[in-house]
Length: 416
Image 1 (cartoon, one colour):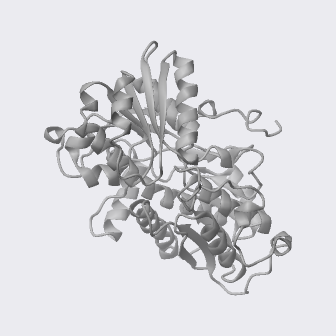
Image 2: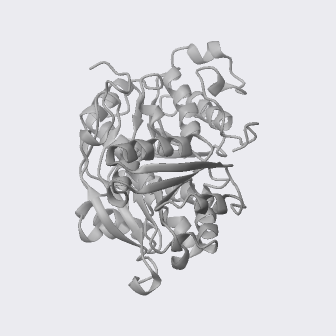
């Protein structure tokens, strides 16, 4: 990404800068949270980038979040109170996300916030929610949000994080002595994935032969491919997201990269694989939080898929869509356990929650509120191996969730 900072969400987020551009003053943000309207509806705010390069993943998250709300309301709601999901477009921009989140809290009186689909944007949302004493469940990959400097008792992270994702992918694709090159999107997501891969490489004994940063939203990767090929790696790790992933892999294939090296991504995206077809993605390996094909192995996956199909004309849920479901559904389970939306009671319930919503057991680790969960490693199938149009990936590994997957609480800066 250009160093000029022209991209709207590649902002250096700090305590003050995250709230830049808001109409409210910093003093207002430091005030205690205001009393909410005395009505019967429990309101959940849901900021997500409905416009921009991550829109496909964001729309899937909304569909799945709406499903979580529907299923609870169909059973009578929370302690007899209906739940409402308030979706707002954060436009993949930290300032916009902070503004929309503040409006959700101050104007719409939401009881909690779930959402955001960018490392930097979720930090901006978290800055607002923790200042107001409102629960926030993030559903996008980030290592930073778990670290002590950005953490609060109100902050929960339902998504996988780059450390656990890259480690799982590296275990399946790298060996001692392999040469590894990296093509990395120049913003927080790419940087954190690169850090994770390099840490995993060092543990395995693979050799780093080069790194190239590319701008967010790049349309042309032609200048990067000859440089990457000249490094003669065994594996090329492409760490980017959304349309960038599809464009980068397609152009790598056009340049003949797959004839020289294996292509690996930290997160292999359902929507991007659909966008460019099986031939381009054939043999690409990456991590995932969810794949609909788990329904043959997991009752919770089968139940989730069935509910989604029933609500969406037979369609299947996607990987990032599943985060919308599990993020909202885990919050609603905690509210049920707490007997309502009282913030402190719900925080306590979330910290004690043992849940299985889409793929197997999960829980939030006490020190940093990271969801401990399984990590999938998938390989994109060739066209002739697909049983149907949705049969996109083969499951290479399904690592059971454990605290050992995570950086230690001490490393993150938390007291033990």
